[in-house]
Each structure stands twice: as C-alpha cells, then as structure tokens.
Length: 473
Ligand SMILES: Nc1ncnc2c1ncn2[C@@H]1O[C@H](COP(=O)(O)OP(=O)(O)OP(=O)(O)O)[C@@H](O)[C@H]1O
Ligand SMILES: [Mg+2]
Image 1 (cartoon, rainbow, N blue to C red):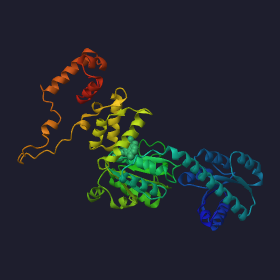
Image 2: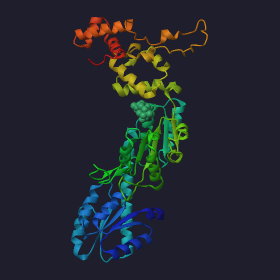
Image 3: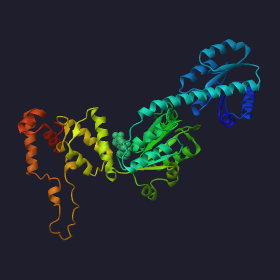
Image 4: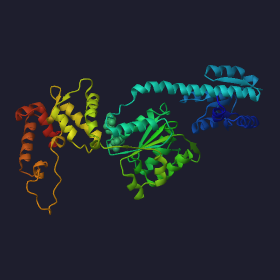
C-alpha cells in the first residue's frame, strides 16, 4: 500500500482510559492515519454514524456499551470497519471470543506502537480489498443490467459518450432537457457506471414537497426538532453517503434550502434539522431540470453559485423531434419492453405517422402511445386506428392571424384539420349520446356495445377515450 493510501486510512479508537486514548491517538496520527477517539461504546457508535471508518480499535471494558456489544452492533451496520480488540491479560479469553464474532485481530497490553501499526495497516488493507471486491463483483453484475439507452442519432451518441466519460469521475452533473427526454434514465446510468455504483442511488424530486418537508426529507432531523419529531430521522443526503444523490427538478428548490445545500456540498458536512452536531457526508450530486437555466438564474429563482457547483458538467438531451431517426429504434425497443419477445407489428403507415409526429412529450409520450396501441392491437398488428388522434391527424397549419389577408388557395384549411368542436347538438354530441345509450343498454359491456353500434372494439375504445367515457359514470 502506498504512503498516500495509508495516510487516508481512517481509525476510530474506543478506549475509556483517557491517557492511553490520547497517547494512541497522537502516535497513530504521527504515523499518518486519520484518527478519531471516543471514551465509550456509545460515543463510538455515534462517531461511526457520522463518518466512514476503516479500522476500529476497541477496548473491551468500557462504560455504557462495552467492547463486545460495540463489536456486535458494528457488525449489524452495512459495510462495517475492521475491528481490532485491545485487551488486558484478564480479558484475553473475551478477545478470542470476539474473533469468533468477526473481529479482525486482538492486541494484548502491553504492545508496542510498531506492533499496533502493523495490525492497523493490515486491517485497513483488508477492508479496502473487501470494499473493492464487492464493487468489482457488482460492477460485473451490473454490466448486463445497465438500462439500455437507445441512441442512433448523432446527438444521442454524443450524449452517451459524455455519460461514459463523466460517470467514473467525481464531477457533479447537471442533466437538462424537455420533459420525457430521458433525464432520469441518464442519471441512473451515470450512477451505475460510476465508482459509487455499489452504494445507493437516492433520488429526490425537489418539486414534490413543501419547503419544511423538503428540508427534513433532505437533511433529516433530530428527535424533538419540531412537534411530532419523535425519533431521529436520517435525511436522503445521509442515506446517499458514499453514493449518488439525484436532485430532480433542482430549480424548484426553495431559496433557503439552496443555501443550505450549497454549504453541504462545499463543506461536505451538514446539520440535521434541530441538530447541533455536524454530520460528515460524501455524496456525488447529479441534478436535472427541464427549465431554461439562464432564465431561472436571471429571475433570481435559482442561486448562480449553486448552479456553478452542480453544473460541473452538463449533459443536455435533445427533444425527440430534433432526432427523428431515434423514433423507429425507440419504438422497436419500447414495444419489446411493453409486450415481451413477440410484440405486435406496426404497419408501414403507422410507422410513418409515428415518424412524422412532433412528440411534445418526447419519449415518455411515445411510450404511453405504444402502451395504449398494444392494448388495442388486433391480430398482432398495430395500424393507424390504434394510434391516438393527435398522432394520426395531419399537422395543423399555423393559424393565420385574423387581420392578415387570406391567401387564396392556402394549402390546409385549419378548420378542417382542427378537432371538431363539441357544440351541443353537433354530430359529435349525437354520436356521444348514441354510444352512451348503447353502453347503458349493455351494462357497460364494451364488446356488446361495439357489436350493437356495428364498429370494431378498437374504434369503440378510441371513441370512449375521445369522449371521456372510459369509466362508468
Ligand atoms: N433513449 C432512451 N432509450 C430508452 N428509453 C428511453 C430513452 N429516453 C427515455 N426513455 C424512457 O422514456 C421514459 C421517460 O424518461 P425519463 O423519465 O427519464 O424522462 P425525464 O427527462 O426525466 O422526464 P421529466 O422531466 O418529465 O421527469 C422512461 O420510461 C424512460 O425509460
Ligand atoms: Mg424525470
């Protein structure tokens, strides 16, 4: 192990004898370790909660929680440190017992500092190997489990190149793009391709909570922080320790929380709500927004200093209409995901309609459209009539301003292409009434209703959706 790595090994000493504790701490620090100390088992557990420790040096006789109990509790935690028991002659048997419980080693007093150094270094090595091993194993398992991001267009290929480049680094990433362009999918991919992939991916939608809830969701709280706060609650930032925190719709974060988040990112520490102790945390931030960044910063809605912090690297996802060559491969991919290995086939004109449409809701809208079409499909085929009207309808020509002179022979008459207005007594309304009557007659049995009306079930479903008659009223 290199000198550099040794300096980084983090040691926690749990020892009730003040002099010994101090000597151990000074000596180990002199050897280049990062050392913390606690006078009893309870204090040691708290430290373990606040920081990541590689090796725990653990006295056996201590007030409150003794060494054996501390060892047990440490091993209940995920990714525990290696534990070396420090024993007097009287407790050697207990130390041997501790080895059976999973302690790495024990040292009998008196021991020299160089003996201690050797054991601590070996224990730190072992932990590092253990962590690396799990990471490698999970990385292998992951390679096959990586969510597929369909990318045929040049712009999406470029986005994938950026994702692969930035993922293994520690840089914060900001993903921008319209709703439904795949921001969340990309955030997951970054985490899974990162060195943090074996730790958690925690996501928080910043628009989903009101301010006070959002604060305790993000930072957690201490018992008694406010009425109703019975016990301590860990915040998402803490649950993401060692992993990735995905802040979705990050520009919706209220101003006060923006300041608190900025401090947490800069100092790598934060306070739980109502807490007085700083908690250390190591998270990588990936954020997403569908808003225009310049606009939210200029409006003063979003702090520019926080933006610079999280915008270490930006990936912007183009709207689907700007990469129509992705529509066909996406359609094939999504159909398989929706309908399994033998999805229904799309007819040529159905494909043409999908390609021609401008997809304001992007890939999510395409996915919803296909889900519906699969349900409506007959004989393993998706035709134009299984696609929603907005997709199959020819594009509406831009509406000519009323004041502008009418050009003779305008290509498309907007009135014809626009949806039929539902004026009472219109054709549309009478059709609706007819369907409603048939539905009542059959007790809302869709198949029989279609029969009575002499239309195919798929046409009926489309009409029911159009007329908002999907549910019995
Ligand atoms: N390139 C792609 N390949 C495969 N699936 C995709 C792709 N892009 C998006 N999807 C799928 O489309 C759906 C919408 O994507 P996602 O939820 O990531 O969008 P988003 O940008 O986060 O949207 P919003 O801003 O509304 O939250 C998801 O089901 C996602 O898996
Ligand atoms: Mg999203």
